[in-house]
Length: 189
Image (cartoon, rainbow, N blue to C red; front, side, top):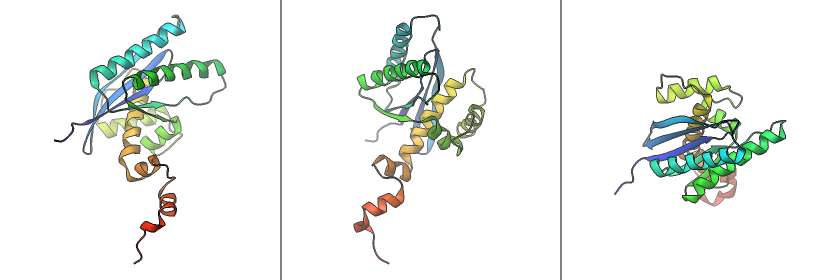
């Protein structure tokens, strides 16, 4: 009996706008299930916003039953308070996924951009243009937070479905490292 398509939930954490996207993977086909944002009133108490993030992630997991959860790691900025708030938002989203026993993977913004566009320094518009090509999407979303979440989900798929990604996931730093640690597997010509 074959399992249905793999569902990946991608999150772009934020304390004012949180992006989320779900994709379905069946063979080599990537289909967008949903993509949107959770807008959090900046005037609300930070703890109320964190509760709203937790509730939304729980709702998404309950409704769509993702196999895996991928989230963008906070980048290091100059504003320490912003970093702390973003870290809290990320932690709450991760805790919700862990509550439902959904495996969690975190990706740096640079890794996500590299995975989608081939350029770790790509801007949000470049990432969106590549996502449009990958999924044949037409309508531009109102918030790039949603497309960032979609990029996180597709990045996770690319990282876990490619042979190099699988090798990296097992603790190897590329094929050279794999070969060095597995010389006994090499057959002479």
